[in-house]
Image 1 (cartoon, rainbow, N blue to C red):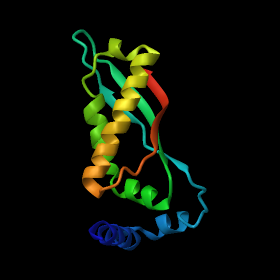
Image 2: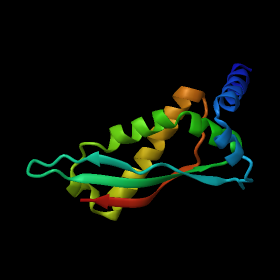
Image 3: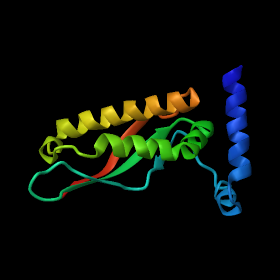
Image 4: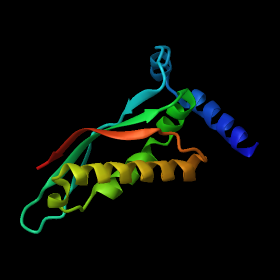
Length: 135
């Protein structure tokens, strides 16, 4: 019962906090499940000789509108978790397909854990890389 009251409170807060432009964007019909594209994430990698970066484009798969709203509301927590997990990695450890797949799974579980701690719900079905650049 507490979870439902909390969820209802969060949804009401979202409706009252959204600016008019965001509210009008919401009038477009979205078919679920749906993907939510995060803004690209760029972090420094751990290299002794020269500065190297990782830039990833991430898509989150959500089941329904309620989970979509939970993710939108908690986006700063999600991005913080992703930046924390990606930053400082060794670039050589990101070169293989297997390493990227392991990282994708680790990020998915970390985002789920973050959302469970914040909302009580996993909220995402999966996480995918739509771009992955090491330079």
